[in-house]
Every structure is written in C-alpha cells, then in structure tokens.
Image 1 (spheres, rainbow, N blue to C red):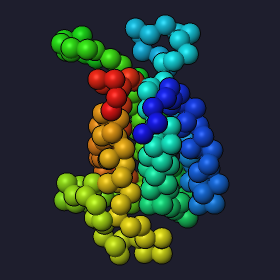
Image 2 (cartoon, helix red, strand yellow; image 1 turned 45 degrees about the horizontal axis):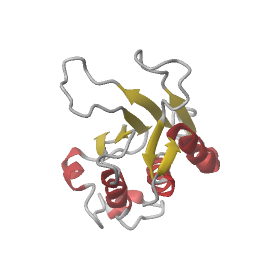
Image 3 (cartoon, rainbow, N blue to C red; image 1 turned 135 degrees about the vertical axis):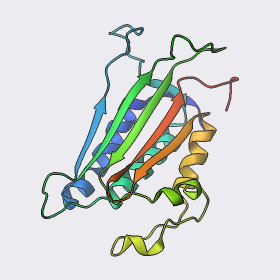
Image 4 (tube, rainbow, N blue to C red; image 1 turned 120 degrees about the vertical axis):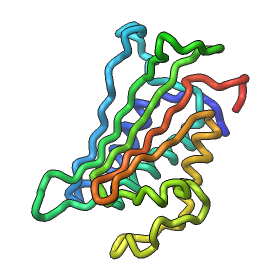
Length: 188
C-alpha cells in the first residue's frame, strides 16, 4: 500500500463522475451527498474529510461499491425517476459516554441503492471469496466473479476500517464503510 493523505470527498467526486455515464444510460439518479461538519470541528477546516490511506485502493473500493449498486439497480418503466444510487460521506462523532483510548476521527461512506436487494439469509456469506448470492439473479446483467465484495472487505481491513451491508430484498441495499482518519500504529 502507498500511504498518503487522501481527501475522501475529492476521491468520491471522481468516482461519481466516472460512473455517471453508466447511471445516465440506465436512467438511474447517481448522487453524492457530503454531510456538513460535526459540531466539534471548525467550519473552515479543509481536512475534515481527509484520511491517511492508499488512494488507488480506496478508489478501487468505492468504484466497486458504486458499480455494484448501479449493476443491481434498474429504472422501473412504471416509476420513472425513482431508481437511485446515493453516496453519502460524513464524519462520525464519538458518543460523549464512550471512553476511547487514542481517540481519532472516523469517516463513514454509505452507498445506498433502490436495487433488487439481497436476501437476509445470504448476508453472512456476502464477503466470502467467489460467493455469489444467486448466479441467476443477474438475469441479463453481467455476472461478476464473486470477488468484488471480498476485495472490498480486504481493502477496508487494510485501512483498519469496517464494512457492513444492510439489505431488504426488492427494496435495496446500503453498504456502510467506516474508516479511521489516520493510520493506527504508524503503518497498516
């Protein structure tokens, strides 16, 4: 990994820009929402959404997540304008009652779609290598290798973060990635 200062807001803007043509072609609204500064961060702080990490790996991670969301979301002809993929970036505040040694800021990115969703029974295996929820579920969509989410999890873990998926079948999926803003122990 090549560690550097990564402005996550700029990285996400780049990912959204790269994926916008796919979204437009499919009739899906793709957006990025950056949530304002938490109360304890100065309003003019430029590094609110900056972390230490590997730009290329993080770009691969979020490109994969947005691409998956677009792949499994389709615009319903009877409900135009309702298909969407939203990416949200925010800084998390520690609850005041939480006693944390080496307290540091966390950034959370959520990729939320109105796609086909994932059955709850398959969620525990979703990050396993080569696991495919249902190879037939893609119908006419390009089938993946089953490595995307396993690779996403590895990238997040290399950055000492967490990745979680919540999904409701036929309603959509939310992937939450939480990352520390600085390296732990000097190097990850």
